[in-house]
Length: 405
Image (cartoon, one colour):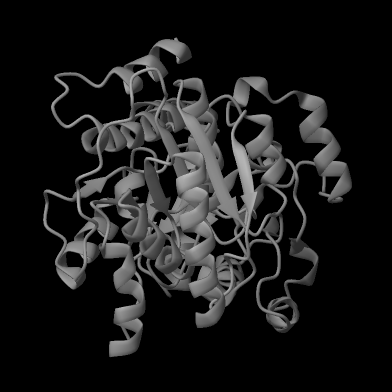
């Protein structure tokens, strides 16, 4: 398996290092948000920061942070387009004196790897999930993510998969959990009017406990199991929210049919457009993550804990690393509505003091292990390993912490 030759000299003195991150589009997914956050952190640390993508809603956040966006059709999986993208990226890398190319998705990673190889630049990848290996072709397609000089995994679950399936040795593999922006996900900053406005918009009943499952409306996110769990719970005094955009056309109707057949129509709201997730979490008495397949990390689990909410999640993938069972939330078997219902009932039954204690523990848990600042600083340290291998310290990442303080 090819690995970029690690012979690139450090950037000349007087010129800050330049990083080019590669993603397909700048939409609202976890990989894209991490890209935006790191782009801004690089600028804050004195680096030169670029992002190449096909564009999207988060493009403005890139430029607002002081980073630069380069629009290319990187979402395409067409082999001819990918080859043209590689040629274009090589020209961009040379013109902008890019030092590190960091690919975060498989299709554009092939173009990025080819361009980094052609220009002799450092190549870094991030595994955002435990990619499936159903066929030899699929495994080969995924293997580009194992070709980095450094391979970043967003959880130990993903790191174990990358090491076992793709043979990535420990010298190249780094585990860096995704982080939450505690300036945004801070319950003390969410005013009562923001919460009340959202409750009015969603026509939530006064005084009813709110159980929320945030996430895209797709089968593997576990919406059908959530509906079945609410049916098994047997309570009529609650309000349940499915919050997220429809990813597979027609799946919303399948969810609605399941709600109707279970006699639960009055208990559910399906919200496809939420532009204030911090306030949405504050509305919830319980936040649920019911994914049927393991998630690489599970961003909503950490966001909800940062907001001090009790969390119930399925016990596989990244959730086993982000929830402390019995301390900050509950873990239940996947595809088990009865167990999910039991845990939701336990969370709803917490007394006021118990809820406050859990909230304090959950907020501290996130602050100690899953912050945006730590994620960005540790990623910059990975870059420094490549650019300054003889340096006794990591000056750029220290500068990032100093800027934050």
